[in-house]
Length: 235
Image (cartoon, rainbow, N blue to C red; front, side):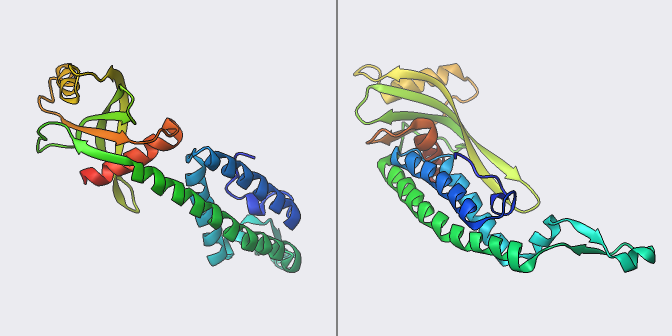
């Protein structure tokens, strides 16, 4: 099982053993991904489900809103609509609570594993500026090199600002442009000059070398971690 629905623990068949099987199948898939150092989207999914379960545990009242309601016969006769939850407290609710109590520590253990992989990838990454940096660093270029490979991938980066009712935060977008082959003549500085010619609006673009001593799955691990590291570096 590659995905869990948002309310997997309280929808469908409410049976502890069945839900345990569903969770373990999902966590087995997560473990397989982590074994290949494929961090995303499994890591972010785990964070979501852990927070979701913790929130449910803190506020069980949300459960009542999901169960069907019925009319009290006496109130119906008086033409008053009084809704009451149809919850078998000793069976359904306690079954869900048992599922949640099992799931939280199980997911927490996999979160620890994912966090360890994230930190390991982050430790392998280094950032250094190429040439003179301008004052304006909200956009520019990132040159990605893996180990001693001659290939250098060029990305255009841009710092973006998100605003919503809860909080404001920054993010970073990285768009692949093209690849270059590193040589005695085609240095990082030479690549920067070539990129500068492609965009006259940035005569001296902020350009950084992002280097990793080890190869990781690019889309599933390397780039997501690299984006966060770059964002922290630029801030």
